Each structure stands twice: as C-alpha cells, then as structure tokens.
Length: 141
Figure 1 (cartoon, rainbow, N blue to C red):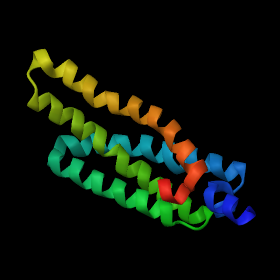
Figure 2: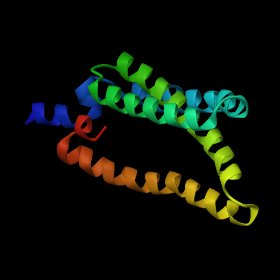
Figure 3: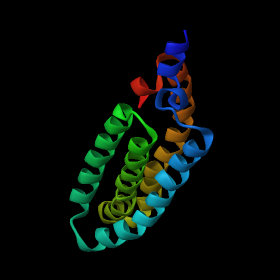
C-alpha cells in the first residue's frame, strides 16, 4: 500500500518536500513564464507567428511528457522551467493572429473564446487532482 501511495503522489514519487514543490510552481514555472512572455512578445512582432504557436505547442507537449518521466526534483525543475517558457510563446503570437484574422467587430469575442481556455483549464485542473489521486500523477501529466 505504501508503494501504491508513492506511485500516485508527486511528493512521494519524486522525494520532494513542500519547499521544493513551491519552487517548482514559483521559480520553476511562473518566473520563467513571465520572463519569457517579454521575449515571446517581441518574437511575435518579428517572426512568423503561426510557426511560433506551432513550435510552442510542440515544446509544451514535450515538456508535459518529460514531466511525467522525471524522477527527481532537479529533473522536474528543469522541465517546469522549460514548460513555462514554452507556454509563454503561445499567448502573444496567438493574440496577434486573432487581431489579423478577425474583423474589429468580432475581435473581442474571438479573444474572449481564446481566453476562456485559461479558465476552463483551471477548472479542469481540479479534475486532474482527482485523477492523480486515483490513478497517479505520472499517468495524468
């Protein structure tokens, strides 16, 4: 039973403590995401925005896979930094593309639909917590 709990729980499965978990969510994700948003905004002004969104989606998927395969705090930290950077490149280019693809009278609605993903994703994260408790965090990463 203890082995099953370790397999299912991120903290036990990777031998991290509460402070390290906080680092994963703050420095590991939020700071890299925030910093990379500045770079991503400039990149969206200069480079092919469709390519930026496509590459960001691929990098995000790779980061998600790597998170599930990580075995310790250091690996998880690098993956979370990479995930924050990958996700940051999606938003500025996406909003810019929406501005190009939708007429002014429909643009606010299109931006609202795009932004809805943040809140739906946040709501679904509660479901992922339930799933990770039932089947394990590696299977839900």
